[in-house]
Image 1 (cartoon, rainbow, N blue to C red):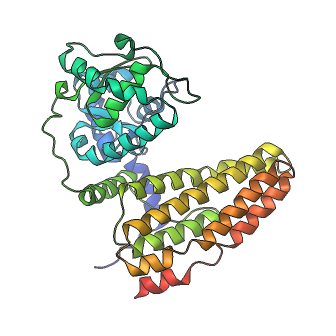
Image 2: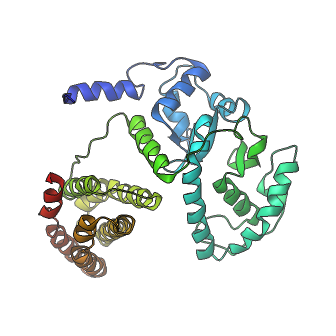
Image 3: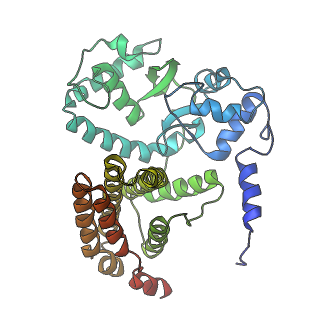
Length: 371
């Protein structure tokens, strides 16, 4: 296959067009244009913060001359051509893809079960069957307030409303779907009552889902470039790319650890900028040290998951199964975080030392790749 070379200018022009920023109504007008655009970028992430508009409203208003929030409301809850679900986070995407996200929902259910256990809110699981029956028989969408189930143990994060917790878990399972929103309040209905969800195709295996999921994500991004702006981030991404080229298999947990790792390193520019302006202050030094610790811990968890999934591959086990460098890095990160509370600049110096462990890439990975 002949390589195709694109200049940076070519990529810039393509990305501007891909995301509909070259002109208004590039993907059409009205609801049809909005629907076409969302299918093009795969999904739009939900965010409840609404100061001058939600993030989705701002994105769409900047691309469509006649956009109003009512357009999105109709596509979601009247026409039901879009649906709310989990992609990389809580997102909205084409209803036709809902069945294909079954494996992602399974992962979300497992994660939410751990959350409920951690918050001591397992009591919500006792009401799943009762609320499911209510949703099946209710002619109108149901809100948490309609259930009037009482409250759970208070938590510093997340709802303590028992009805809300039950409905959210059913939504994670795909049993309930969001039928309407009244400001920030969600109303749910059973998925069998939604238009066209009952007979949507699903994947037979997790491997098939992952192939589709990765290709879909790349298509939505338009261009995916592994280079980055900072030395630590760039080297990490380079080694990460090499690792994914020698493995045979990934699991759903691998993707979640990978997404968490990427999210954490995207916070580096903000924390670096804050640290640069306040290099002797405690708060930015502590945040910087904590971010390094969490990023490296997430990286180690992802590598351990890859070794477990690829236990049949002796090369992967031999190369990635040696965690000594990761353990040394984590030890330095913990030390940096502790010292940052007392001597802020000391935490930064120790994190720089931990970075030096990763300056030289693992040559064994390159050798395996070449073979």
